[in-house]
Length: 571
Image 1 (cartoon, rainbow, N blue to C red):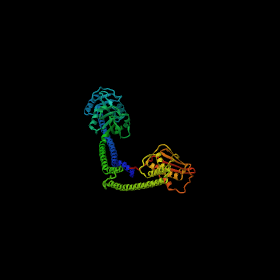
Image 2: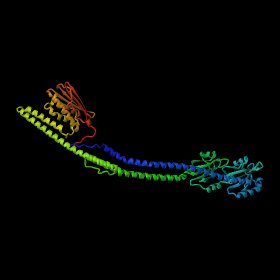
Image 3: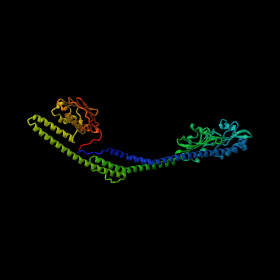
Image 4: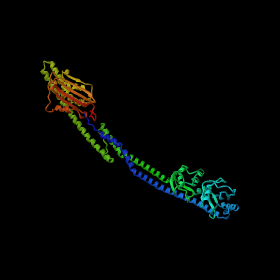
């Protein structure tokens, strides 16, 4: 019995496609999250841009405020010096009275360490601390500048000659009329200046730096002990003489990344002042908000992906797997396998119900095919039985006819029996794989009879499949019948040569009739020619060529030994 199988190539594609459903659901979930991710990124960029502008503005404003406070301190000292210079004992440079006055003034000021009166040569006349008169300060830069200008002179980082303490010198010329007769100078204590900026306070992670016009740091918060008295790094020296105040992002010397506002040295600002705001502190709220947004986005993505997997498994993959499982079971012979989905699971349930309907229809067709095959087999066996009966009658008639010629009777009976056996070959559906020579011998035995010497079969061993065996039997039987009726085997001198070989996965077979009667090309194609041309299925890629030569028929046949594609299996 031959059972027709369903080609499940599309089903296999369906299975492999089902495996990608989860991936597509994940892609859909991620695509749905894309606008939220884009919005988060946009908000992050916008917030950071706005915050950066605000922090730069705040840093610049803080630097201006600090510079203004420094100017106020210097203006206060300037007023003190001008007022002190107007005292007669100071203007007259009377040492005894001068010391007393300066001591009284200095005792009321915490910002200065000493107040000095110097003559035109830079030598000490008197001071608030009673130093030795005549001490030479003429080599000091601020003294030389004071002798050359009537304006207040703010010096540079200086270590006091007597006390050995760091100060910021400030001096003004003593005038008598338009003539400079001396210098009134003092030194701002850097400890006091440091205490002032410490009291001023800083934002977390911030910094404040005051430096002289050469970039030597006078006061700093934080870590004054590390930086006071050192120069600002060379890459930032251009900020001291910048044309106007500004801001810059940099890594401070303590390793903190800051946004720094600065006020350069100018006529209005005798000292360089900078304030820095920590970038990590300034952007901390935004970073925390971004982190919170990312966490929420990750949670949302996890929930979306979980939902995709759950929905995919419950409503898509499980129904698909159920349908595929039923189809595979049906392919494996379980003909009553059904999904029983009956419209459940939405659209896929309708697919399952349609598959059940298809399988029901295929089962009906299979049963009809089985019944048809059984009837066809029964008719073929009945025909074979009747042909055998006819052959038996022919044999009986031959025995009566050749009653006294036993040798001729035996030959004739054997040939009739072989013909009956060949008829069985053509009628059977139970052929298995067989060697090509065995097929040729079995098919040619009815027509060859006692003329085995006149039939030559040559070729290598080659195993043919069931389809090739049946097709080759039909072709050779038809060729042999024609050879016996009209060709080389119709005459005693005729011979038959059958040669085959394998070539690149194909069988090449040549049928040559020798020393037979002359043959002519038929005017019309008969049934035998159509049978020879159509015996092999197209999957075996058959090719044939017939030459009606004067000395006998020449026939060439070629077909694929092992064709690819779906085969019909015998059960």
